[in-house]
Amino acid sequence: MKKKHELFGPFIMMIICAVLTVVIVSTGITLAYLKDRDDVNNVMTVGETEIKIEETFPPRTSPPYPGEPVIKVVKIENTGNLTCTVRARLVFSESKLEKMTEPLEIGEDWILRPDGFYYYMIPLKPGEVTKPLIEKVVFRRSYSNGGAISQEDIAGLDPELIVYSEALEFVKEDASLPEAEEILNNWNQY
Image (tube, rainbow, N blue to C red):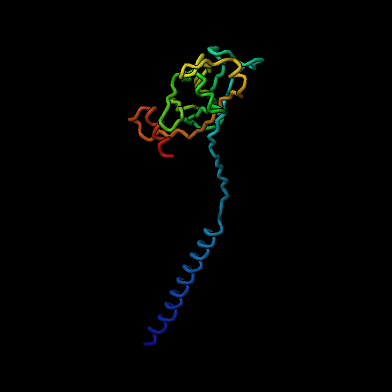
């Protein structure tokens, strides 16, 4: 019987030592894992949708004559770093002016929607410029009711055509749709 007890004591000590070894080693590994770290700098760049209206209109020394075209070229440039779609609205500074001018000749690739905006139907990549929205304004020779428009009538006004424009990042979500339809879909979300 005594032999059993003599073996039992060292066996218990071996088990205790093995358990302590496992605990110490796993604690050391866990601490090493938790202490080990590596710094990583994530560089995030933010895209910008930014546009600039380019207007060309030579200075005038006198008011235009009825029927004479007044040069006013309106284009929009994508100055941001994302491909975008643009729309613009043209508003006369005085409501009388719209009655005194011929309907505006809208440029190629622009369409007028019921909301009063002209939509450019081609996405603009960074640095690209639209085709002209308009190139001239022509004062009528007479009002729609037949009354003549004189140079003095025009001189009494401050004729200004205000250009307001907006841009959205162009997101092509459905490859099966034509770009023109995708452009309008992008704007319909806002």
